[in-house]
Image 1 (tube, rainbow, N blue to C red):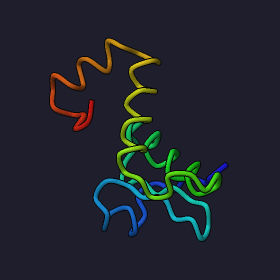
Image 2 (tube, rainbow, N blue to C red):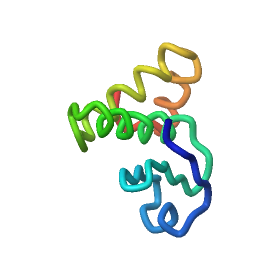
Image 3 (cartoon, rainbow, N blue to C red):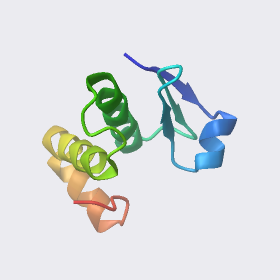
Image 4 (cartoon, one colour):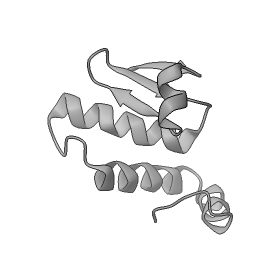
Length: 86
């Protein structure tokens, strides 16, 4: 399971968040369940050696997870322009 670090310089540079395979860490500038799910998928991609670095796979998986967990939250996020992939 990857570690999670909030508000790091690396996260600030990326603006959104990133997964660093070298130390198995997800960096987020601020907490976002959608970004966390997206970066977690990148960690899974790396560990399973599947779709490594695939943004389309990570986006699709993370928004699908959000939709399954809370369809109303998902719809509100889409309506407010907070999800860029659906």
